[in-house]
Length: 103
Image (spheres, rainbow, N blue to C red):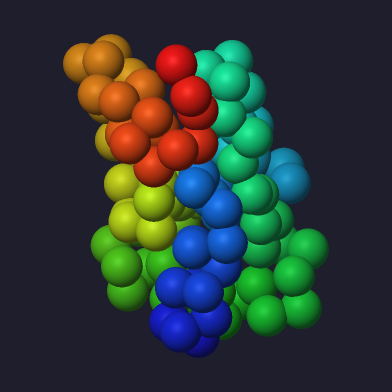
């Protein structure tokens, strides 16, 4: 399952593991779109192997498990980590470095 998580995390420059009913997941997706990124979004509650993926995210240290954000294939963290990076101004730089946005 960690291998599958790693593979999915590298499918695009920005990847968000979410749940369809999670308001924080929705907020992070909205933030990425407002910054000009088009992340791959995997809703683990709609995936047949979602429970396994949730366990793998927990092993990575995701608490809560969603949203879990990867940029450039690297684990960035949960909503609080992403929002902290955005407030510091480093989120946009991470997205530019990973070629998720181009300005």
